[in-house]
Amino acid sequence: MTSAAFPDDRSFPMNHPAIEADMWAMHDHRHTSATTAHSLVAEHLWTALRALGVTGGRMLLRGTDPEALAGMPGALRTARPGQGDQLQASIPHPGRPHPGLELTVFVPDYKPGQFDVVILNASYADVVHHDGDLRHSRWQEHNQAVLSSLSYTAPAGLVAALVSADVLDAADPGPRRAMAHLADLLGAARLPAGTLRSVAGCDSPVDLLLLRRRPDGQPQGGARFEASLQFLFDSVPVRQNEYFHDRPADMLGRPVIKPMPWGPARLTVRPDVVPLAQDLRTTLAQVVRNAIDWGLTARRTMTSTPGDEPDAATQPEPRRRQPGGASGGPPAGLSGGSRGRPPARPPSPREATGPDHPGPLL
Image (cartoon, rainbow, N blue to C red):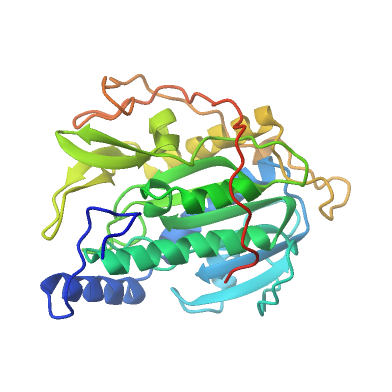
């Protein structure tokens, strides 16, 4: 089968070693905890959410480690590490961590606009799929999960999604156009290979997306992300989303070519000398500043009380970028040797709209 999303991928018979490798990678994903990494992501994510104006309301947690992603202190968590679920709770007053959370099971009811914040942790996001059918199926599932999360989000509410890098990079722009019809992309951070799990086969880059559900009648804005660009990198044809072409510094590592045992080489991101916690914090701080400049902050009808507004202690620190040697060539800042970190360039708001959203999806 030839996929419009991954036209160069091959599909293999069930007895092929590529299928066995994919099955082992999925097994190792399920049996290797990423709770420590999820807790680190949650810490900096909630700093950004507070700076964007989240002071109350309701939140929905979808996927693995919902207690960690909700900001619950480790000592108070009752679920085993790696356990997946859909949980809901009231958003506590600003402050970290979030003690006293009362998380309850969410039964999907297809009622749109129930939540002010939705945090999605899509399944198998860091698995390296060699088989084209498995890779395409995961891509479809992650797109569907993002769209359904947006359906559950109130106007001007926020969605944070940990998804496969394929969501942004796949050749087929259709799902991204559907997302752009519903929401504005405030920003993204591409986590390096092995961030969540230091296990062979679970070392694909993972993207943290931050989206704002667009109220009816509001023009499209935010960062561009619908197009995926094809170019030569170290003489190898690869694809990358226009967002990272505009903002190469939001890849939290060094882009390199990864040879694949079955199929064409792929572009991946390796960790570099900048500690991940520092890089994620400063990247999200830049995302927050861009969103504030665009006027794309959290909705003002969230339930809160006077004094709940985030103070200076909860504001992300300004991003400090080290001068680097950005390579000439199609995407700016990509280099096989060094990683340039030029200042982010906020694009102008988009004008074209995407197709109608198909409705609540799960």
